[in-house]
Image (cartoon, rainbow, N blue to C red; front, side, top):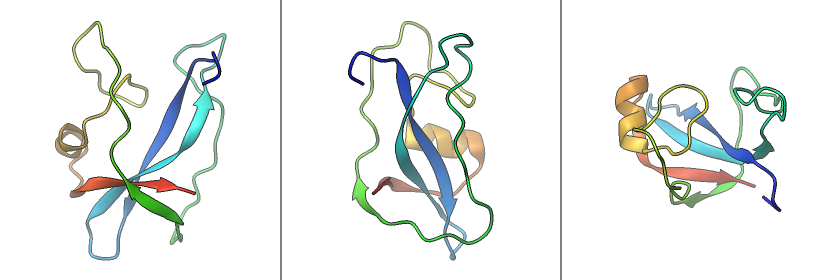
Length: 97
């Protein structure tokens, strides 16, 4: 982003029917000292309202190694993430406004 290294923050949002949707919450820079961290961000607890638009999953970038798992990763595949997390993810994402 403007020559800075960082990530699009994705958060699964559980819907009232028990399914979930991935919400693209925005971009945050990677920590320059500890590359396993990003800038802090707030995730509210409890019921929330999200304003956004239905969007394709974030674009994929070239990966040198096999697809990663864990909190910070180069790319995300919604189907694989659903299997990994055990969430009933809908096959779409919401880009938060």
